[in-house]
Length: 250
Image 1 (cartoon, rainbow, N blue to C red):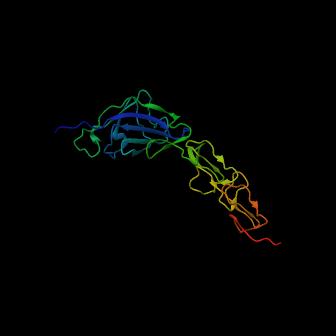
Image 2: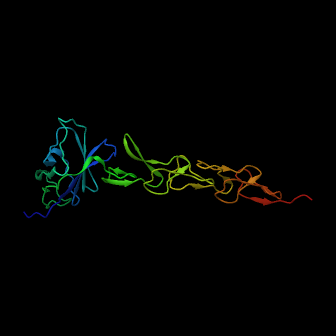
Image 3: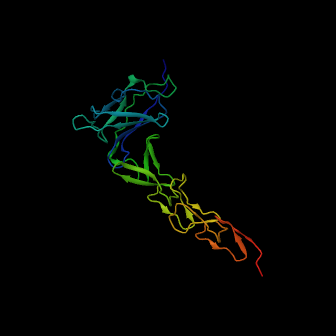
């Protein structure tokens, strides 16, 4: 039988996806989509220059089975893994038959990885982004959110009411100016909403607009106050968006 060249293990990185030293993750990158064999990690991967130990390990294939994420559980000096950046290498066990996806004639992966890269004490992502467990890479905090770091790790949090974030990877949210507002539970928080005709927003960081009261009106957007109704006009109520001329006595 003639085998076609199979998938190769290109790199293994040690990561801390939490950014606060709370997690230890290995990211294995392959040259193409794999058959994503379901096997015990200790049987799937052989180690040179290190050991797995006996602490729990959780595996997950992501990125269309091009990437294998290994979440290392808490371990002690006695049962934890021994993995040394710059020295430890990994090799897929040929017996598990990890192949190129949908190609049974591809040779089983058996390549030896380059030395382990990265560190478990270095954050996987730069400030302003968080680790995406679905893709296995870092994702910038989206518009309308801000980057937050707590004892549990880095997260992207939605801007609170009255505030917005117009760009990705924001570290804080901006306040809405007068004439604009941001509801507490609004979905798109990348830009403040503009007060519509007949309403006004008189304060900064507002969560809602107020209707003009009787005797006042606005006929433009983004107003921070309502104008008094002209003496020769009648203003509608509530939320006066304009006025109509009426006859004056005399």
